[in-house]
Image (cartoon, rainbow, N blue to C red):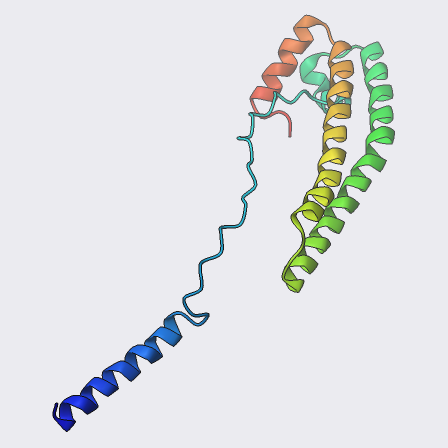
Length: 163
């Protein structure tokens, strides 16, 4: 072997070693198994949203409410606001707390999956409770109407008369 060939071969080996260190900084240790993924079910379509008493009252002229119906719907609306207000505030507070927790967990680099699930479950339970109560309230509010008024209400909801 000539000196030129030997120096070229040495340079090539040094470059290969340097490239290996850059490409594989931890060496050729076995790869970690992939982190477990959360299996999420495909979301089911949301059921048709029935209007609250307040939303029906807002469409009162189009629906043709009587004075008695208006009075019953106003009472239902007051009850709904009294019931939903504290629950909505609790849901907002839990959502903000969860956001702060997640921001802190990301800043710290890690949080256990169990803790994330536990905190998310609190927010989810409050949201589910609010949806169930709203559905029950809306069912009572729509029950105040007669069939013709329900059809009129459906027409105003479907043409963008609601939220």
